[in-house]
Image 1 (cartoon, rainbow, N blue to C red):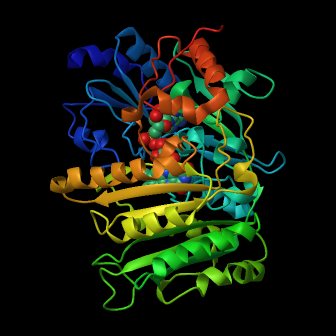
Image 2: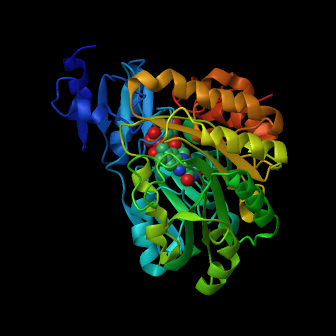
Length: 464
Ligand code: FAD
């Protein structure tokens, strides 16, 4: 394929085509995870639905692999591809609010930070993630667990409409009235169905100020084990206005705001957001705040947008990441002891094991492809490191944890937190459960040749 071949596509675009010869190419090809280093043929930075149609048609007609990039934060690197075409939606980030319908219209390449900024002007929010720079595209299409999940559900459950460019290059609007099957599949089916150029999300009342808990306690002398037991007890009676997570790790050398001399100590951290009255939130979360000896405390009444950005600096662009996640029904003493010990001895001081409490609206069945697990906890081993020489040790740390924790899980995964290529189709079946066949049939209708396969892929299946 030569540069000239691409000029035909380039000429048809409102946006820009960044090919290998372009000085911006190296920057344009990069994604958040430094572990992923791929060289596409070109990055098409789309600015309109027509651009997306042109790029999809071009890729299909020239048999090029297609990577669709929203926010570029797929841990598995699904937003890029060697020798194929990247459809980069980052410039399609318009956000609008309909105050009558209580919905937000959001371009397919927007980030959660961009959505929060506008919706919070009216004290409204779409349930997003806990990091403001992830794309709404990948996160919402694949599920979406965030700080208001237990109160308002997963991001995918709030999708009420979508404009989609399908594999044939057709533009389709999916709503409950038109193409309801497609809408159903988009709620959890990831990037399998097409390129979503515009989402319509249901809005919910939040903030604009909230009580947010972010406290790291000293984990030495068995406190990590005791802390996870306290977290289990807290979750057993926590109201659904609270979405909480616990995580264990080590205080990193350059960690800011921690008490002096604590570098290298194990910690047990709690982070949570309460939707509703500020004082109620503070009172409800007091047991986790006052649990032990704080090394760092960032808790308080803060704007919801600040809570959404609280952990943004923890995951810098270009560092190396290998994450996985398991749905675990119960935090047994065995699970707690294992997580506490493994969290205190990671392969990298930047790594953590995170435990998300999933309850209330987040545990309810979604009217969509996402198959809510009956499990109450999501356990994520997150290996985060910097040097290429540490790749093997960190990847092994995460994999060993998954192997060890798997017997305690229900066998399903939250697919957005990692690529599970090595676990194959079985993990897709286990995670989509009884939605798998319907999703595969809808996939066959809209993408029979699996043009969109760089994602948590569902093989198209002819209707039985
Ligand atoms: P991309 O790399 O741009 O895309 C990933 C996938 O989504 C690709 O398969 C792509 O085809 C598809 N896709 C993206 N946009 C579109 C679109 N408009 N149309 C069609 N397909 C599209 N998940 C949570 O649930 N909660 C969290 O709190 C959370 N925190 C995270 C924090 C960090 C630092 C990171 C890296 C990830 C986090 N995740 C979280 C996981 C996150 O949901 C996934 O990594 C997600 O894929 C990111 O979406 P993206 O658009 O940025 O990714």
